[in-house]
Length: 150
Image 1 (spheres, rainbow, N blue to C red):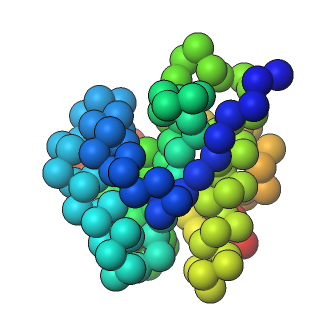
Image 2 (spheres, rainbow, N blue to C red):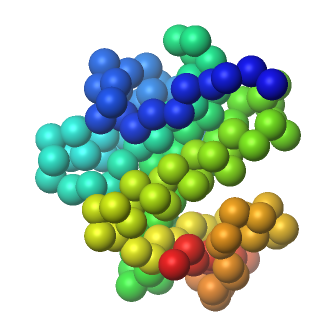
């Protein structure tokens, strides 16, 4: 199995713009929204990090932490968001390693628990996440699942 590099954006701040472009291309959220969150993280305004997996110079996986991932349960914060692994790199444990890195980094900064919203069942449980409740996503017809990692 190939060795990939797992980093926080603070370790390689020069990746901010490529990372914002990458996340934007995956989720259809404006690049500026990612840059705003990344800037507040890099400027030390909060410890809601951004995490990347690199294959050489190529971003192949990533996720971030934001206050609220577009749902009505504002009390459930912060939220892991934008979890994505490139299709050709899936089923290698990349997302799991990024999730563990994210949870440990948040915990080391005194932030616990963390939450995430997803339609997946069975995936996040493998990495210590537990189903917590349902929440209404902004503009969504059906409620979505909220998970917690303590």
